[in-house]
Length: 148
Ligand code: NI
Image (cartoon, rainbow, N blue to C red; front, side, top):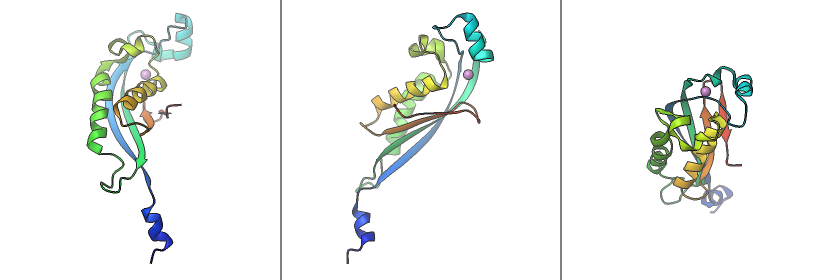
């Protein structure tokens, strides 16, 4: 007997996987579009010329169909490898402004860091799988970017 429970179990299910990754980096908030005075006013102590550090925690979320054969949205090994390439290789223990060419002209706010990570993860993951980049800059400050 094919009841509604059974038929719905045959429908395609969509699941989400989130993997968390921590990394450490330093930066200085300074916009090339603003004067030194304006930078100081807007960014305050984050504009300190010698920079400051963060222990960032990034959560990468992918969304996709739960494969009927494997039972998985995607293989966590592949997700882990992409995160290693995009985040750890380029950002961990780096000076974001000086070591990452992208931030030579783009201010290294956590919003822009989320965009940078999104762009890298989109290229590394299978098409249409990336759902969200969430960065915990501190325990209290959390930024989300979904590619819009
Ligand atoms: Ni900062």
